[in-house]
Image (cartoon, rainbow, N blue to C red):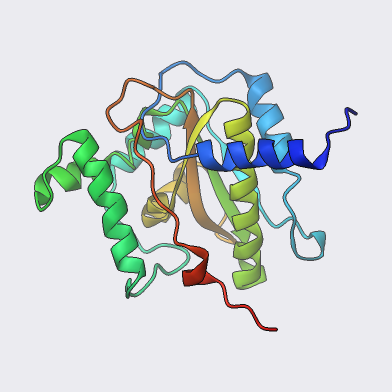
Length: 226
């Protein structure tokens, strides 16, 4: 194994973190199986409580992706396996709206145009044209801590995808049609569907490709105790 000094490690990690973004447009070309396996092996290094590794992932390819895309777009919203937030109080609502504004501006949706924004939101269920979907689930008996561990898996997956040049977007919206996913992908009821990750080769020419979101300053999120 090649030894990398600490400054180089920071540079590599920093580059991956700054370059990673939610990809909302994909080329139709499938990702090779060997690349998908490499991505999944890297994601498998995610940490978890007592090494429980509660995640199980269903990855779609080819006809499997088209089946899920077709069924998701045909379905209406359903009760998610894990309840969604009751409200987005300040500052969470403001951050959410600012991210939406940037996306809508980039793709030509006028702020306040409910019809156009609904059509843009519906692209979640079209998987943004991605050739692959990874559905992340946790064991229902592990409660919120299983979901927490799966969050580390999602982040590791996203960074691994970025390192491999693969575009990806985590989608909580997929959980709004959880019964459809359970049925179409034969996911048993004792598995909680947390989110999907659509992935594939990114389309650099899509108008939303350059959209990036800001991060809150440390003064807003960190408290030091001396």
